Length: 315
Image (cartoon, rainbow, N blue to C red; front, side, top):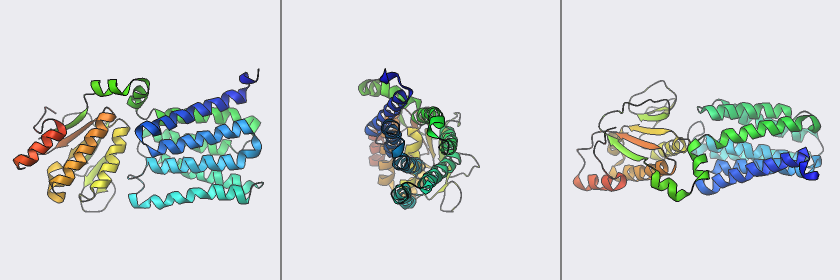
C-alpha cells in the first residue's frame, strides 16, 4: 500500500517534527522553534511534492535553519543590535528564483547551512554543538542524488529534531503532562542568599562581579571583553539568563546589590520578577547572592511579594 512507501513515512515524520516544533513555539513563545518548524515543513513538502521543488524547498529550509540558529544565540554570540543579520536569510530564496534550474541555487542554500553549522558548533551548549555538526554533515549529503541521500537526510534530521527538542528535558515532560499539574508541583523559582551557594556549577550560569575563565560565567563590569556584561544593560542579562533557564540551567546572580546600586531598585525588581516567572515555567531556579539589609522596608516588602521571602533561604 502507498502509506507504507518509504517516502510517505519520511514525509509524515517530518510533518510530525514540524508539529512538535510549532507546539513548543506556541506554548513557550520561543521564536527559534517557529523557524525550525518551518524548516521541517519545507522538507516535508519536498518529499511529498517531488524533486522539482527542491530548489525552493531547500532555500526555505536553509533560510529557516539560519534564522533559528541566530535566534538561539541571540544575546550570547549574537549581540542584540545585530539582529539585522537575519535579513540575509532571503538570499537562498532569491537564488532559488533567479537561478531555479542552476546549481547556483543549491550552492547558496548549502552555504547557508554550513554557516549555521559553524555558528552552532562554536556555541557553548553541547546539544547545540552536536546539532551544528549534524547540519554540517547534512549540507554535504544534500550534494548527493536524492535516491541515495534521502535516507541519510531522514536520519540526520530526526537526530537534529531530537537534540533541539530535548535541550531541556523538563520541556518534554511539560509536553506530556497538563500545565496545571506542572505549576502545582513546581518548587522552582527565585531565592536570595547572603553567600554564594555550595552547589555544582556544571548546570549553572553565573553572573558575577568576579571574573572567571569559564563557560557560562559572565563578568558584570563596565570593561569590555569576552563574556562581560555592562551592569546598566539589564536587558542583555535578562536575554541570556532567560535562554539558559529555558534550557534547564540554574541562574546565579552573584552581584544583586551591585546591580541595584547601578540601576536603582525598581528596574532590578522587575528583572527578578520576570526571571522568577521564567524559572517557574521551566522548572529551574534563579539564585541571587547579596546582603540586602540596607534596602528600605518598602523595598524589602516588594521583594517579599516577588519571591515569597526576601531573607536567606538556606541556599
